[in-house]
Image 1: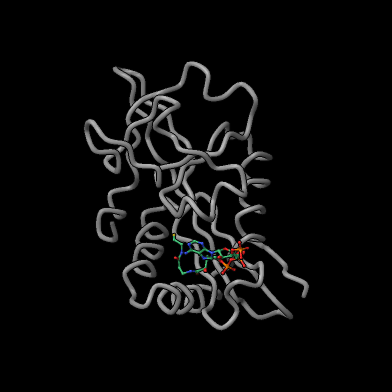
Image 2: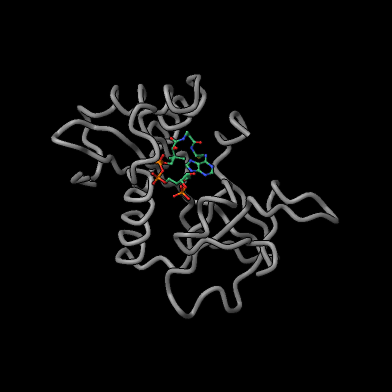
Length: 174
Ligand SMILES: CC(C)(COP(=O)(O)OP(=O)(O)OC[C@H]1O[C@@H](n2cnc3c(N)ncnc32)[C@H](O)[C@@H]1OP(=O)(O)O)[C@@H](O)C(=O)NCCC(=O)NCCS
């Protein structure tokens, strides 16, 4: 089965909404994608196509990483969704890998996400907290293994650490 990954186009927006809503069983994640787009915060939006039909979607926005007075920005994956009838056939994997390639080519050093520890490590994501990153998803005194990062450039994360904040619209779905 050939899966093509490409960037979203304006005419894809309603199909993306439908796939996000169907995959998550409600429209909160679909509305999150719309909000990120409306705020010009979608730095990358990929669709997966099979025979010209959109069957999956992955969104990327920037997080801030604050370390004292130093604030840096990195991409984060989410949400990612595959149309329910075609889940578990490699579409999500194709989207995840294409995103890592595109962000690497764009020169980013790392990418964050909050997601399943059973799914994302196969693409190279690992828990972010042991590498010096906290987030609102990491409770004081406790770990949160769902908060992960993938390293895209060898020189990261050396010297980079801090508190990671996602776009405020993520608060609506967490
Ligand atoms: C998560 C999702 C994007 C994965 O896409 P997919 O095309 O179904 O996944 P793939 O076919 O590439 O990979 C299948 C593998 O992922 C695992 N997997 C799929 N969804 C998973 C999930 N939510 N949690 C853990 N593992 C998952 C499957 O068990 C399977 O594992 P295996 O290869 O060891 O058998 C898709 O299932 C989906 O849209 N789920 C609902 C929305 C969601 O939960 N999104 C992620 C949170 S942002």
